[in-house]
Amino acid sequence: MSTLADLSDYLLVPDLHNPRLSRSVTGVDQMGAAQTIAVIEERPLTIYLNAQEIVTAMTIGDYPEYLALGFLKNQGMLKSTDTVTGVDYDEELEVVVVRTLETANYEAKLEKKTRTSGCAVGTVFGDMMEGLQGLTLPAMPLKTSWLYALSHQINRTPSLYLETGAIHGTVLCEGPRPLVYMEDVGRHNAVDKIAGWMLSHGVEPGNKLLYTTGRLTSEMVIKTALMGIPALVSRSGFTAWGVDIAREVGLTLIGRMRGRKFNCLSGEDRLVLDSDPSEVGEEELRHRRKGAQDD
View: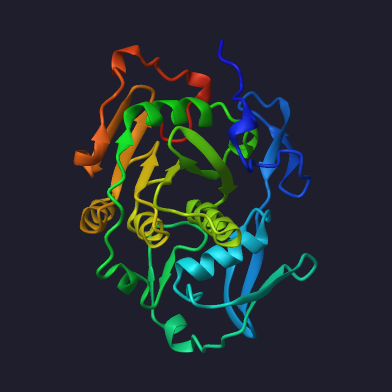
């Protein structure tokens, strides 16, 4: 039987002991027997940029400052030249305000939006896709030994998903090492929290990859590319538009990563096949996540 992962490599992992993130709910099972299970919380978070209300996101409520920073950065509302003077979170009001020296009005941008397949904040605002024009990501080699090592460790990392289900996870990685593990009710919320963490700590993206549990949709690919991260890996499957965008910007895109198997639909030339798949163990049933059998 496998053991839980060693967490010493991580810089940040889900806080399973935070009472605000889940609660016990009592019901009955298929036999009518009383049952109490842990259920993930979902609460609104309204994000302001200076005095302007931008969006209300549904989130589990951890790391609201990182979520706000990352969301604004990924939507192109927070420029690399902007100076962030403060990030203020009011837990009672469920509001976070990002303050900058620069001011801008995004009314027109907020009116021009495209709904995407993402959950919770499935929207691409304004000219987000215009940020991809002329973008070419670093041609980072990606070793298959890294993929197998990451899959093995991440699947065994204690998480809110394993406690409650109904949640997505995304991990920022460097080589075979997982660095930051974020979870949320929407996979893009988890990505935005990682983007906010990277922005806050001045992290270089060109040698990183994202490992996620969610589908490889256009929005996931766009956000990863805009963050400057050259590889995106998922346990789940692809959308055609996501693959097209990945190929256009030079993003290595790997899906259906389970046990020894995976599919690479963009960036095949950057794969370094340094592991023998026959020597990689199959994924244990207890570590399988949503969609592991039929996606």
